[in-house]
Amino acid sequence: MAQATIWRVHTFYISLLALTAVVITWFAGFVVYRLVKTPR
Image (cartoon, rainbow, N blue to C red; front, side):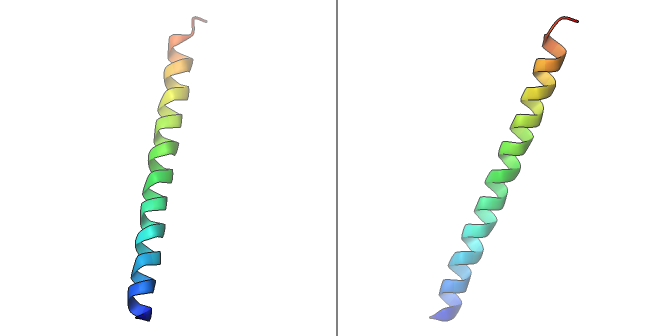
């Protein structure tokens, strides 16, 4: 019983970490795109 709960929490944290990594990567790419697109 406890093992299943630990596995569920572990999966939740892994998915949350992956989602955070995707958001950070998208935001960094968006900032770089804005910097490149804006005329100096």
